[in-house]
Image 1 (cartoon, rainbow, N blue to C red):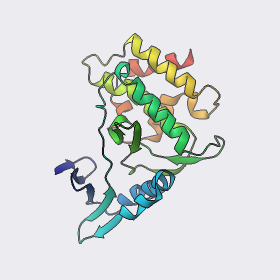
Image 2: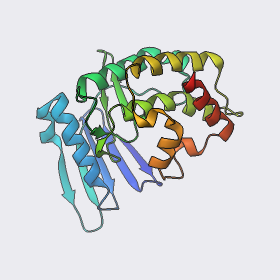
Image 3: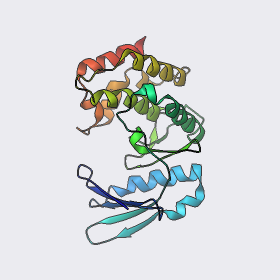
Image 4: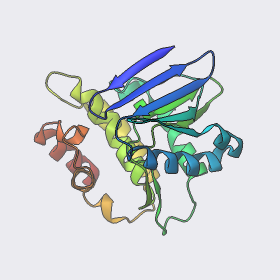
Length: 223
């Protein structure tokens, strides 16, 4: 059994890989609503039977959300994109499969799609967790914009100089321009600025990286 506390989010998580359960304990009784809405949408797309595993327990000062447990492993967020290319490909394939095909409509938005919120399985499938930042309607592909930028920024944050290596940029550009090759969305004009305005949380990873690196990323995406 694993017990974790996130002091920033004020959430406690209890999970057990043997009994296959996960409980999220909220002290803020409003925060769980987005998470339920996100999971309901997602599980309908991957396996409707899992929806039955979502239950809610309301206590005097807390709310306990019981969620389905996904077996697998997570990629450490500080791992360089050089070593995660296969996993990134799986995430992009999963998005194309699960999300609506019509790119002209507003689509559901996870809101914090990084490796920390993805469970990979040895059978070459993945599951997305932690839907507390879920929104019903955002531009198609915004989650992938967020995800791809995180794959180079988060590893850079773990380095003293917060640098992104040339080889990492080459790989990043390959995924970026392939995925968005035929897209003309507003957020693609300046994705860094768009995401920064979208996320007012001071702990958001783009607010922690030095400005020179952010400018560098934007310049790379203009080429």
